[in-house]
Length: 230
Image (tube, rainbow, N blue to C red):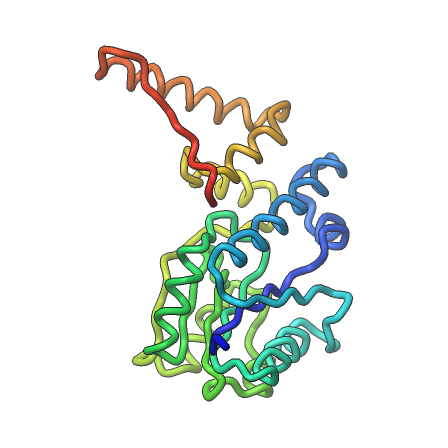
């Protein structure tokens, strides 16, 4: 059995779409979170690392800290000694990040993926570093989370992944979408989902400008191939 597991700690599509309004159209907002939830499961599956999904239906605790700590403890109680915790709100997170986190956890007690708002899109932790009381007391769901975690733990045994965008509102979603690779399958699906939205028009204008600029440097028209893997 693998000594490492992934914990997908996130709300269900229905609850997430009701609590995080990225777009005003309820149907499209629901579709967005459905897509992000599906993408998160897809990259976990692609990583070949055992994974567990813990949404609000089985979370235990009176606050976020207690709920995520209880979920982590449950996975460790299954016999795993390394745990990678992720959510559903980081579009750029890939299977490669997960496999890298697993690899680094074999030689480090902690692996963190900071997001640009001061939180963390990934937390990798060894069982011997996990203490329920301490873990639940971090400043969860705040811009001080990454700082509070890295201050508490010994950074000499910690590996830090690149900063990535998380999605909390329309502005952060637009920024995250813009930074996704042009050939990203998720970007393609999000553009298709919101093709009628005005803020996508700005992106389409940028694409046409890129094509026009690229055509100056080549005799033939540029060829784009979508990489349909996340």
